[in-house]
Length: 194
Image (cartoon, one colour):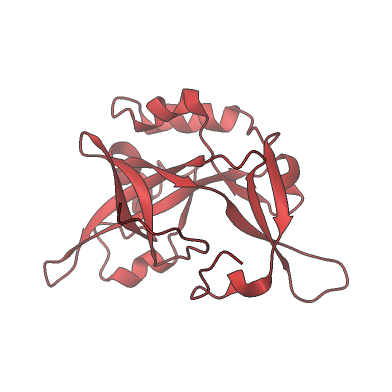
């Protein structure tokens, strides 16, 4: 109740995220992680993704990687493919072939503005691309399979252990497909089924 389908979530917009406080809940957070030490909200504009290989070391993500891991449920994600002979890249919607939900690994943070307002933000964890995604882009979100969901949200799991294990585990792209979509996705305000 109260949730509206989204078709084109862009950075700085709200998206559903599963967080633990300590109980799991689905909440709307702003895409683009703003670290606690940031001066303003604009810091999150460039921190939309965090590399699994370095998130535990980078000051912007280190604290969230330790204490505030989350899951970002999506029905797919977009990447833009270079097409020979064309100047513009072709947007591709990457999704599970059966239409299922992908559980993307993420980090979240609560940033307090100078006014005292608390803004909760998140970033998506990425890794080197593999399979069909590698033909489109060099990075891809970390999609957690069922066996990884509990481990990712486990507060006892150390960031270094998680990072090493995820990097060592091959990404399963066998259930994914890439569908060419219209350039309407290039405009963040365009949020419709077409």
